[in-house]
Length: 110
Image (cartoon, rainbow, N blue to C red; front, side, top):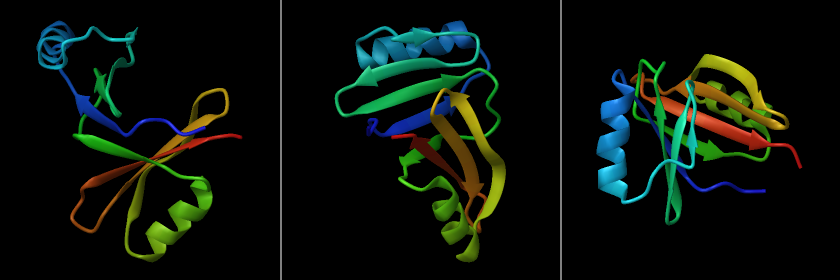
């Protein structure tokens, strides 16, 4: 299963951020929790992370999470957040390129 492209924005004031992104996107969030607020729009998704410290953070869907991490680290990226299961069968990891820009990876078990 493939998910739409995702960009996660770190936010410090959740209520203001929700008001801004609801006004911008013209829809309310489809998920609204203390850990994540998600908006689906067209071909993509915008997420708000109340606990985020860096961003925006783009996520890429990958078929092989560990293989992709190995390829990226061999090319010079560094792992900043080890693979973590965030829901059953759904794992994420975060790397950084040589300039410190974040790269999010998502994998869904098939």
